[in-house]
Image (cartoon, rainbow, N blue to C red):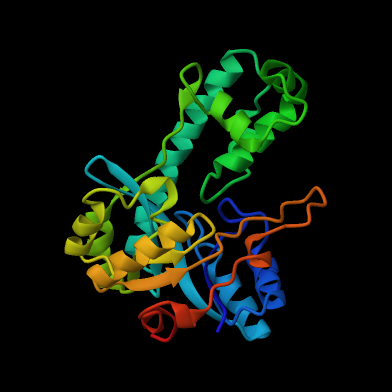
Length: 286
């Protein structure tokens, strides 16, 4: 059975609405899916309703930026009560912190002579402030100047963000991290499974972090991800057996590549079959 337990919508850093995502998933013959927007659950009701019409089983999900000591990593959370007032309070806290950080950098850019309509940019996003979209709005207002400064006619998103949102001159935008122990404490009240997200990306699974997360009570890790090499996948399987973890998989879909490329998204070469993931029924058939 084909599943996809990590996709993103317009409510965070994706470019398709939850309804459009369901259409995309249906076209790729997905039977079970989870919308995992960053630090917001605002798209889940629409995703669930669209899933019913398309006969796709939907699972409540979210992707959180978390911390433990000096380590930063992402956590996927499934099958929780997404209407919980405590959860919404926690998410609003992260969203406010995020908004303050983005505002500061935008104001720094404006003070340096760039055209920046600070309030107009911020007011476009009522939930998670996705830096890819903020960066896109900034580039649109300063295209000629940025192209000249970077020496590029078509700068990549990474070029723009690195030069203007992760720089010593204008400021380094950090995520609004949540201590994982707070998440685990809340999980005891509202349920669900906590999954170490794409741990092979940037070698997040190095060192003692997996052991510490296992001791705290994390339920599993994402094994199948476009961010993982075959070596990463094999090591993730080793970790899952070592700690008796659930294995999950997701495409991390955000948008179509565009520009008439022959490959437009991960599902053109990457399949997530539930039969290859140990204990996955604990999530997809709770």
